[in-house]
Length: 171
Picture 1 (tube, one colour):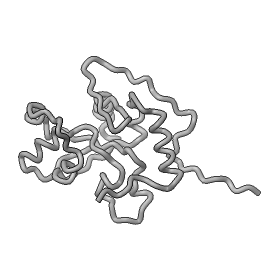
Picture 2 (cartoon, rainbow, N blue to C red):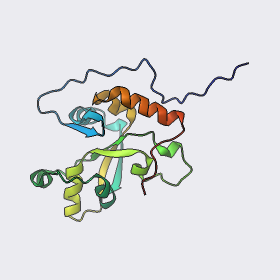
Picture 3 (cartoon, rainbow, N blue to C red):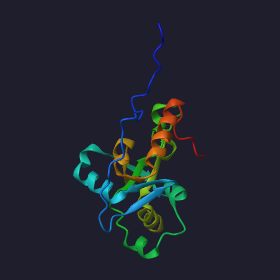
Picture 4 (cartoon, rainbow, N blue to C red):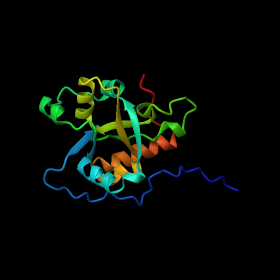
């Protein structure tokens, strides 16, 4: 009897197709490497389905050290609404489910990147605020809002699951 190969339940199958993300004038897009997302669409979706998303507190200094960019506009930092949660996208499969390491509250090491909120982090840091709220955005949500790099992302994601890897620790 041939042993069936284990397939992780979060594998993206051949049937998955890229959504035709509607792009409205003024929509905000963000890149993470070759992957691009319509962040305006994600924010709208979260606003309509807020109860479906985990809201966490993250340390400002820690996330600022990874997601601060030199191209942040001072006027946008000044206007940033630090009461609005930043978005942490699950870019690699959540390591919480692949590792025995005690990394439960370290979302960055678990595979999440700040894809919306760099200006809010910068403002919070300037004001000496210790923590800021963040929504965890799982792959199943943000993939619906990909505008570039879809096929590469599906391959990347599935390779991580096949090899039992998730986001590598970054310390």
